[in-house]
Length: 138
Image (cartoon, one colour):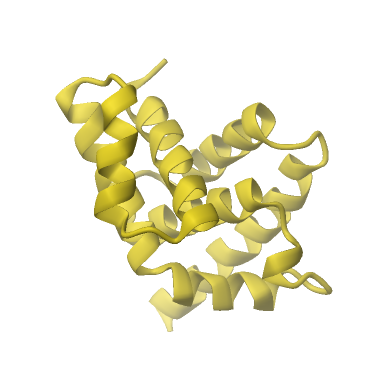
């Protein structure tokens, strides 16, 4: 398992915790790292993804509500919301090629969510990527 994949898993777990509790991100991180073990680079990238996704959660949530037709954000499973926040944040900052970011998000969905989640999330992430691409070129 790659460093970045493990970092994404950790970031997703922290995002899920944050979504459920709405505790301060620093507290979520502190509590999470008391029980999770990771190398310094893995931890650093996980923290960057988590903190960035939390910081941009409001903007990302607006985009998701726009793209997820007939679905309110609060109706999405918490893990799916967290996967979307993580992946869209990463698409925005360009830490990896878009195809890699989306593939990684779908792998997380296969591991942590329902059987239907990957197809649903793929549609939203593809639309999000196209929306972000349009803004960047426009």
